[in-house]
Length: 192
Image (tube, rainbow, N blue to C red; front, side, top):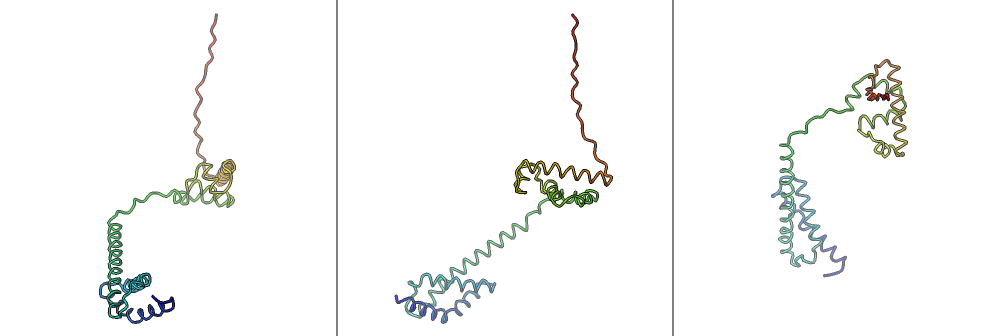
């Protein structure tokens, strides 16, 4: 084995002499032009890595490259077959059932949309995080907003209150809150 410069020169000569033959080899075995060029690249990359195994006699070098190219062609074919099988399985799968998007329902309600346009952008984003993204607990909100959980709870309470006020101003009927009566305790006196 010679110096690094000699190795580079001999490899460059090998490439100039054999690259077209390796490309024809790959084209005869693969239908995709890009895959054929990939085989040429992989072949010469492997040949460079294993330059110490390259035959010295020029008549043996092309068959050696064909052996490497054959492996690259088989790898390319396996990859293509895997892609086709995967695509076939994906095509055979049923699409996931469509689920109702809460955001669509909220956005469809014109009154709520109008009320939301009258609150601050900070309040709107906070309310969107709860209604559309499902971040209903103060810890999740705190993480999304970069604030403490108690601050998130307070901000959410205030944002809901301001939205409710806007809905009232716009004449929206507010649902009656559910009031659960407390059980009555009667005090009975016993007479002696």
